[in-house]
Length: 250
Image 1 (cartoon, rainbow, N blue to C red):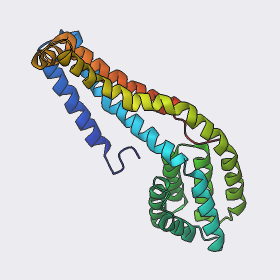
Image 2: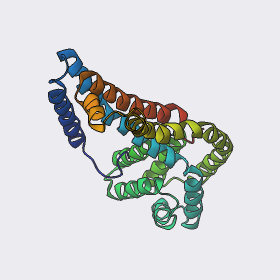
Image 3: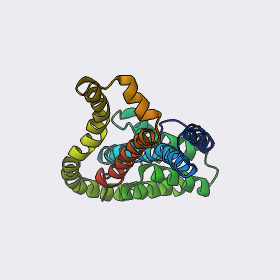
């Protein structure tokens, strides 16, 4: 969900540990033991914050596809005569707008076809619910699991779910408009300010570029300030992803 391809927890932890050790060894030349540990922890926290941002962004985009997803799934479920496997296959292969949820449904379809029993069907549905991270996603996953394991008719359930999604759509559009400005400032404006500051130091104050870089990266205060800038930027983006850019839900 976060990286768009299978990434094992071991690989992620190895990378983060290597980053921690690299900063720990580099900062030990300039900082006290406490400052060195603080710099290493801040650096190691950045990949986790970026992971949270990517995961929440993927869930947010997937939640926006809720109306299209349920509409197409309901239509194809009716056409197939209540065959949930055929409905999932047609939805995955026939709707290009489902960029996030289409991949989740594809993985769900593969898992359902290979599921040896009801417990495996339930786990596959739980994976879909986790990927969506919404109330409507959990409701949809439960009904898909019921249809796959018991052959239950879920037409009425999908119709009710679609009605609730359409009612929530108008509220989500207003929330998106209010939060758009903060997201643009964090994602676009703030990363531009740092190189602009370097240009101002060199061009208007007459400080040589080598001196600026020396003070920034080869002094304890400058390096710690740079790490704090990166950490706070990532933390700000993660908080906006968690609270400001809410998922489409009800």
